[in-house]
Amino acid sequence: MKRKIIASAAIISLVFVFTAMQASADFNVINSQTGFDSNNEVIATAEGEVRFNNVNELDVDNETEGETITGNNASDYNMGRGFVDTGFVFVVGTFLNNLNYNLLNYLHLFNSDFTAFNDLTGACSDNRAIAVLDENEIDIFNDNSLDLDNELFWVGSTGCNTSDFNIGEGMVYSGDAAVAFLTENSANGNLLEVYSGLNAVDFCAGNEATGFNSFNKAIAAAENEVDVYNKNDVDLDNDIFMALTTGGNSADFNIGRGRVFTGDAGAMVNVGNKNINKNLTRILLGAGHTALSAYNTLTGADSFNKSVAELENEVKVKNTNVADIDNDVESIVNTGGNSASYNLGCADILTGDALSTVVIENKNVNSNFTEVLAGAGNVELSAINLKTGFDSYNKAFVGMENEVKVRNENYADIDNDVENVANTGNNVADFNLAPTTIVTGGAQSQTVIQNQVNANYTSIASPNNVELNAANNLTGPGSSNSAVVSFENEINVSNTNCADIDNNVNNYTNTGNNSSSFNTGSGGVSTGGASVMIGIQNTANSNITE
Image (cartoon, rainbow, N blue to C red; front, side, top):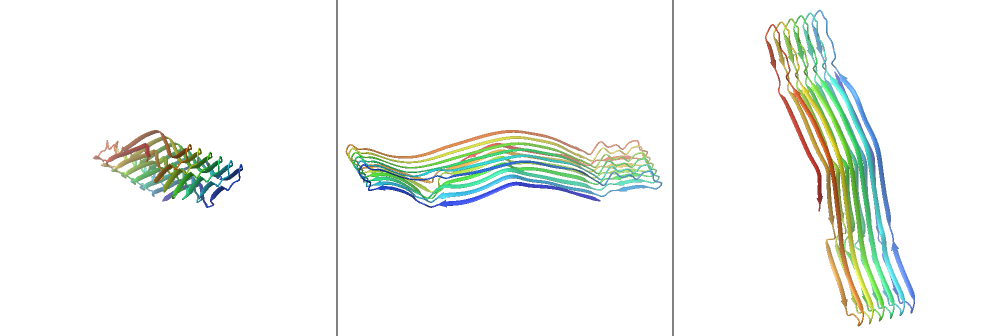
């Protein structure tokens, strides 16, 4: 009796980053009570830049080759009987590969108010108040490259025994043979969660009680930018050969009877390529109530007054996946091919059942899941000119712009080649001087292939509720007053999927091709049933955008 277990596992390249930060400092810039003909400038700026670069390059080879044999025995040329009785063969093999994963959870929210004021400015003065969050930029780049080869060559046998040329009877009893092999591959994954931007923030820019012939400019602005690029490339080859036999036995040329009883043979091969090139990206820019306001009030005669409150959010996500997967599986199961011939006694051949099952699953190959929320909660935008001076120029501008670009590119080339054979036949019991009987077991061959490739899900949402207010009230004679509120959403989603799938399946089952001929006694053949089951499902190139 012999039992063989083979196993190989690899878990490589896992990167996890978690970072959290909240800024709560307020940005307040004010020019107040400035002097005649003075030049006053107050600037408060903040700039943030964060970069994450994860590059994984991996070459993995898993190779296993071997034999598990209890057969190939001989009990020949004995003065008495010849007798062979073999033990069972049991083989279990596993390749587990989890490779190239990047996990990033980044939290960076500003709980800051931005305020820029010019107040009580002097005649003929030049006043600038600027509060800016400039380029709060987050760049994320993930590059995964994998060359994975899984190779298995295994032979298991309890058969190929001889009990020939004996004075007594020749008898062969072969044991059962079973093999189960699983390869599970999961590779190239990027899981990102980014929470950035503004959290319940007020932007306010104003000019109030400005002097005669003065120049007053107040700006409160913020810009948030998130760039994500996920790139995955995999070349995956699974090359599996499994052969099991309990047959190929002979009990020939015996003075007594010849008897061959073979055990059952069963093979199960499962190839799972799941979650290959998978990108999950969630981005939230801003949360809570955000208010932007710009106003000019009580402006002086002949004065120039400009107030600007502006918020810009820009998100770019690009996912590129390339997968080349080749699955080559050959499974051969045999309990037949036995001989009990040229015996002076009766001849009996009884074969066991043969079952061969191959399952190939290529699931979630090249998948992109992207969620972008460009601001959560309510947004209030207000631009007002109130009580402006004679012959003055007053401009109040409030703008909010959300720009989201998502581009998904998937390229998949999948080849599945399967040779699946189950045999209990091809037995011979000829030229015996007594009655002969051949009884074969059933033969069943099953192949299931499922391909699920190139899927994109994209969800993009804007703020829940936006309130816009623009007004010119109690403007002075000869004055020029402009109150502008702008809210702009620009969304661009591009999906490109290319798939080349080839499924080449050959299933063979046989319980026949037996011979019970030229015997002095009766000859009889009784075959078991032969069945084939093939199932192939392809799901490719799907895009869902909400």
